[in-house]
Image 1 (cartoon, one colour):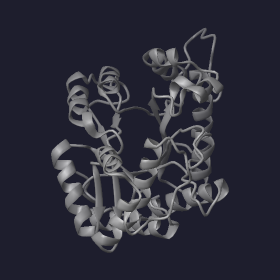
Image 2 (image 1 turned 90 degrees about the vertical axis):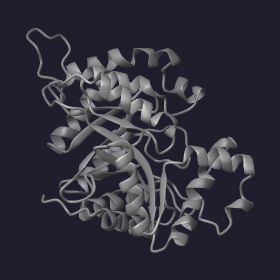
Image 3 (image 1 turned 180 degrees about the vertical axis):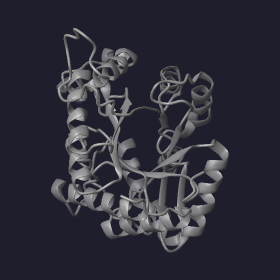
Image 4 (image 1 turned 60 degrees about the vertical axis):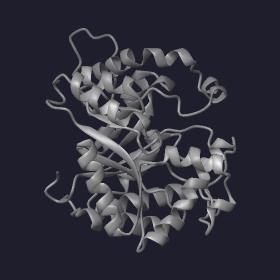
Length: 337
């Protein structure tokens, strides 16, 4: 538990493109949100890699990280995550070595093995499904490229070598948990959209953890949707945008984010509602009091060291307010630069 609140809270950013905006405005909002998160005491802002999704502007993840880091002063900024099978470890080492040179001591590199897209787009990225099978080896290769170069090392990441940018393993199953434990790396579980294996993954990670040069004891981050407003009713209203977004995914429709609606039951079918709410069951939605109780219960249940917050709200003013209320509810305090 953090001395300045219930636990460190971080924020996940995807550069959500709204129906009333465009990519430029989405990226401007992402930077503004990071600035507000920094001001109220959030620990990190991470950017997620997705491709060929009209409503998400974070495909060029390292560029978005630089955009956010350049507009903030001390909050950590990183990837949550880079989908490593889509990339050469050398290229990622060079990109994040460059980010570390530009923003020393502020860069995180979370790694996932999912493609972050569909099979056709995966082929357009010049990758194949088999690349995911190399994920453990690619993590080790990337780790070596970020370490100090060895004598006579033929391939050196420039920039990158010697920066030792902190690596995280991300996951929505026990595979990533096992790998993170074996390598002695911090682990982040995506319970904000895949909550079913949360407890199993945390248990595997803690049981398999081996101390490493980077980390001496297990460190777990748990993803959680939190939407805060001045009342429970207002927060539930704001949450309808995210729920419609997931419903559209089930329908195979990749649409821009939609404004909230008063009666979402007019939008989805009972079957769609059941599927979406199962994905979003680890959501905390409500007034500051509701948010605090929900966060306290989640930390008690999971023993998480940190929470990664998704506050997916349509209007920027409401999202900024949500961040402020979450910080207020959980006792965050601005960090010294």
